[in-house]
Length: 516
Image (cartoon, rainbow, N blue to C red):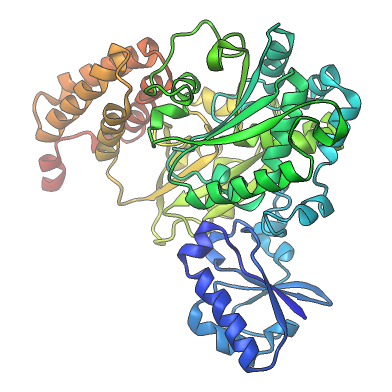
């Protein structure tokens, strides 16, 4: 029997993977071929999806992007034996997009059946948890601290410091909360973890629970990820039945279990305190800090709140040791970052690499420039509230401190590319409009400032006192940046100010631009 791998990742599903899987089964039956379909995750090469792989004596051979009309021709070409066809790309790991990566967190993505416990265990699954049980709480925290892992949700706060704070805080109950409210435009790494390697997150949260003394974990997921929610819940049930979760994790005497909660879709619930409010059943409103959630978090108990990628990285660090992770990266940015290449880019997808590549290498070399073939004009890093980088700044290393030095942020690793047709004044207005719509309304600089920001930009568009309104807009941005209660209002000025700084020619009345 030949095993054929058809991804169940939502990108492949959107491009017809289910129908292709059914067509392969039907065609094989009609031709007397014996096949077994495995629904694996995605390799992250979205430009090749659906990427169909066939298990052969020489290894897995991939074909993509496959459409329904290609199925018969693939059989004609002998694809079940790795035969030659125009869509044949050979061994996936030899493809330049994958070969240049350093996959530590996404090592299994696209290779395994996401909900198969056997597959997960066969590919180094649970090794980190088993070592964590052996070495105990203090040593786990020490490993995470020495690895240099920083929060992958955007803030870049040292994960080990957060875990130690919760571990050292006395309480009758503690919690681990996973922030899976992935709302940044152009990001999808959290979704891929849920859909393509859910046991990795379960293992990471359990390691965290052992480290800090928590017995309960929550995953807060956005409602727009129904496939990820389904896969993760199925994985939870299987992990619980196999003893990886429950009252006695792997016979260790430690209790830990996880529950997935689905949010209603508010961007502000990606902010940790608003997320806690939502988890407790209230409207997602930002809390003033202090107290920090590590001291007084979910249900007023000490709580670790980490992004999906931060927790999903813990199994590798525990299995291979802190040094194996910290050996990658540059400066204070240690390890790898799963970059998410999106927007107007030729090779969109997930590219995991050590920190330190320049933005130009990422966009032009790895991403292949724009999908439209036109010159790149702007790259937005860090989501809808991230700064715009022009090609003149393409020598900036992808690193927390290097981006901060250029008044930018790397955020969750989202990189959205625009070609030379983009209107940066309109993009600046979008940032203010987005903030106004998504603001929880608790603080004045965010609630009122974003609305006033839209109005000021509209006046610039209309040619009303342009110079005076540009000065007013900059002043307003500074007020929002330093006066807002959380990152939503505090970061909204980044795209506006960067657009003003790098693309001043766009900040003219549109009638005047048209006349030129």
